[in-house]
Amino acid sequence: MVGSIAGSSRARCPASRACAPNESVARNVRFAAEQKVPNVAVVGEREARDGSVTLRRRGSNAQVSMPVDALERELLDEIATRRLR
Image (cartoon, rainbow, N blue to C red; front, side, top):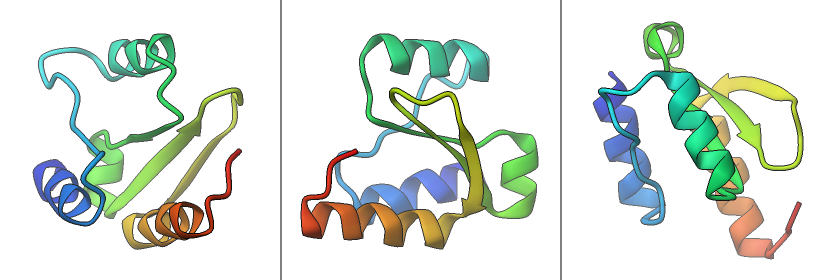
């Protein structure tokens, strides 16, 4: 499931990429924060089972869970309107 989420996201959003699968989720999130990645979509076991993602935005400690399609629509809308957070 995680692979299919990453693959479908990459097809629609070429800048998306998957992190190192041999590292923990926390380590991948920390690495993304260090690299100043603006949006991190976390797909762990629970998210893979539910078909959702947990979104973490740079500069905020808030985490929001949402369906993959909703995340895609939100990010593509932000890109189209060039809305920056």
